[in-house]
Every structure is written in structure tokens, then in C-alpha cells.
Image (cartoon, rainbow, N blue to C red; front, side):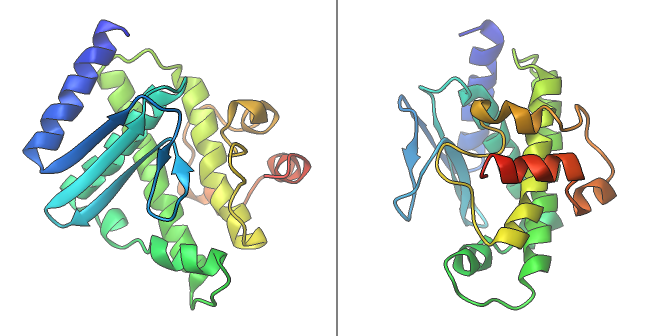
Length: 202
């Protein structure tokens, strides 16, 4: 682990203590969440004054995950409208078969909240001089943001290990821009990228 990584982790720990956030760093590849799903990391707001940040550290992508989830924590701390107005529960229920009014609008709100998070993550990578390839990070981030459009169409989340930004799906995320685009870019999946979503069975 580099000096800058250690310094960043110390910064995360300090912020968690300051804002009453429980920090879970586990030496595993995945972490179990509420519904028996396993993920690389997460941030959840328990209440307006209490949160939980978790990251699996026995993972080649752990630093990317930690920066991303910490950036969600920043959204929560700052109480930005993009964070306050999301409704992930409705999306989860819809994916499980329940009909939800205005679901596409709800998913779009999540999409742009995630875009804001990814931009914050890149700022944190630069600020803390972390050993992360920024162009590669942004390509993967863009594949993830565009994925929300695919979810609206297919009504399915990606299968475990087959996220659009997974290392195995380089054919997909390598087609994505290496910089963040105007919001209008994320309204529709470009044809070449859409074709890869289908080909790879995302």
C-alpha cells in the first residue's frame, strides 16, 4: 500500500468519526448487504445524522470502490438535492416485479446522482494523489452511468461479476469516453456501446 493510499484511508476514518459514520473495511472480496446480496462496497444513510460506509479490501479494485463510496458519503454530508431526492427502494421493487409509477424518472435521478458521485471520486483521486488511472476510471464510470438506461429498457440488473465496468467487460467500457460528458450524453446509450451491452449479456 502506498503512502498516499494510507493517508487517504486515514482521511476517510477521520471523516467517518466526525460525521458519525460506521466504517467497515473487511479483508474479503465482497461484503454481504441487507438482502443477502454481495457487493464490493456501499454507503448507506441510516438517518440524517448517521451512516455506514463499507468496502471489501481484498479486491484489486478496492481503492476505486472506497473512493466511490466515500464520494457518496460526501453527497450525504453536504445534503445535496441529488442525494436527498433519490428513491433506490422503488427501483429495487420494480426490478423485483412490482409496478412503480414514474419509474423511469426515478431511475434517471439515480443515474445523475451516480454521475455526480463519479465526478467527485475523480476529484478525490486527484486531490489525494491516489495511484488510480483516471482515464480508465472515467471510462468504467461512464459505462456504469449509461447502464442505467439499459436497466430502464431490460428491467434487469447485471448478473454478479458481470457489471459493465468489470475487468472482463473491457470490450464495453473501452468504447466509453475517457472524460465526463454533458448530461445530455447520458440520456441515451450510443449505438456501438448499446450493441456491446447486448453482446456481453450485461
